[in-house]
Length: 259
Ligand code: F6R
Image (cartoon, rainbow, N blue to C red; front, side, top):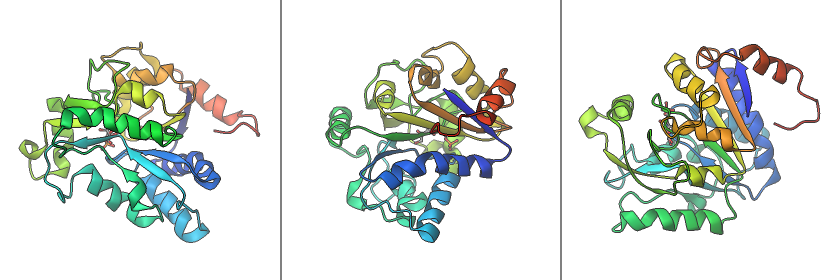
């Protein structure tokens, strides 16, 4: 795991864009997208590179991590709508190749297996954006999620519903159920790129990065992944203990070593 600590959320976003850009330039990449606030600035930076430097997304396919169950189609807080607003509408991604789990499926319990099969058929995710919940969730895999889980229906914790109430009129409007890629599904992506900023994430980051591997902190499953980049600002890194080492690794990174 490579831990990159930047002095501000803006610098963290630039670093995330730097890590992802070579995959976009390569073409035919399968990009895994996260929603929520954490990746928004990095999406903005990638969109700027599209606008100003011609960074070309035309050949890419994308898969979202998760989706609420039961929000009416067209609701502005479905992750289907959010990712269009935050990213897809600002680059030249083909909307036909922007995939998300169908939270309104008639067969919501069969939807997970269909979604995993679609990811597989596309060749698997090359690079996966990730955020982290204050309770350590990854995707919407809440504490005690199986570390080998597949895409499926999950129930949100009250804490997550409280955290996400800011996007809705009230906490009661936040759906209780979601479809989320499983932790086993997420681990199959070839490169994981997590971004976390702000002090509210400091405790979850410390547990995920330096704590024991545990289903009680689902994001700790990143420790099993062979290629995982964690990009933080100082506030999100505040409860880590080996900070000087992480900084010296980045400062002394061999020039030819890719992210
Ligand atoms: C969203 C997702 C979640 C969020 C997490 C953090 O697709 O999978 O795990 O990344 O809830 O949300 P923010 O970034 O809003 O703090």
